[in-house]
Image 1 (cartoon, rainbow, N blue to C red):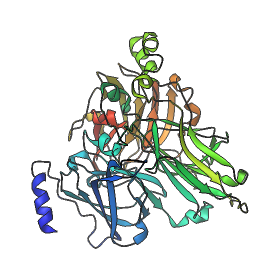
Image 2: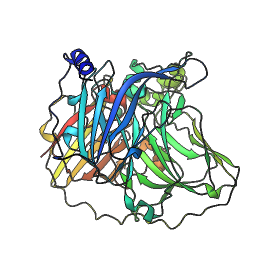
Image 3: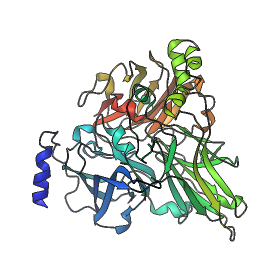
Image 4: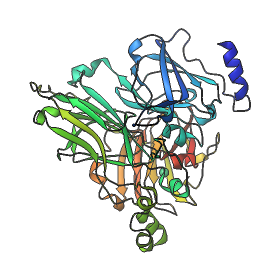
Length: 503
Ligand SMILES: [Cu+2]
């Protein structure tokens, strides 16, 4: 083991050396996991296997059920309990630097997977944190600067579920839940993923016309006639989904990114759910309301407000691009376009006795945020193929005066997507905090997505439409250096990412 590490360590010597790990626990943690990122190949379609990158995981100490295989190209699902003290050994068996970010999780800055901690080929990084988030659907994925898009695209991502003992008492279906991780891919004739970063991709982000659910194509689920807890996660580089049931039934939202809605907010019925990259929702879906034997589909409905033609028109101030490119520039050139209709998954309702759900007891409402002790403002712009945050791009360790906030005091942060350049939506993510959306204003271009945007509950990722102004409220609980960035991975890798400092 030591020989192997020394050998591999040599290849990493030229790359960034991580800071020493800050040990969070004096004694042994409850759970010790190992996660390795490595190349591999898997059968996804008939014919040649697909070359991928994959996460493999093992429990080194503690509950064996903390790691569950997901199948396909997706990394294993990690199931953690609130309050648990966790150590995770990350091993990088890739040719390139990498580091894991626990998306949505409240962890110390040294455990957050900032790109400054990326380890080279053969390197290892040790995370220690206590699970402080409430029950919910979180994610983990790579976060090395400039390479996140490719690494996620080739298969590095997974679901992290946090559970709490009192979930059963809330009337949530305990043994009937499904997680659906939705991703789009371009697939070549030889079954290989096609990741490019063309000029078009740097603007729109990489879009594909083939959908994977839980890392596999053609997803189909046999379900019983009863309520299910469905965890929906968009783990696509750039695609926005307008998720709806093929039979037109509304969607019943019980949770957003960072835990259950309160009893004042949910369940919330919407005709469809708009899900931007790395957002999540949970639905309480009663398949018993369909006849037995019914087959229904989860689909992504077409929408028009964000075609490339629209964006180019916005930039060039005329209709000529649309005419020139046949309406949909991305569609014509790439075979994939933001806003195209896509099948996601099929559900077959089994026969058998219908089981009805009990009453649902969502958590009590939380008090409104206190008067902010600090006000931040970030203007988003996109020009010369790059995104800017207050006119700046990524700087590995730097931050500006308007990127500081106090520890443990209420903060209000306003984002406006009204800078000069191309008008486009951006899925923004803030590390290290869970926020509430106080206000959304403007964004007139979002008409055919608006009804599905769920701003309730605690969030960690939000989509901001062109012209929109969004105000967040939160109280930072961890000190140090964290990041905020666009979660369109091509925008992020292009530098649409900044640090903020707490404390
Ligand atoms: Cu963006």
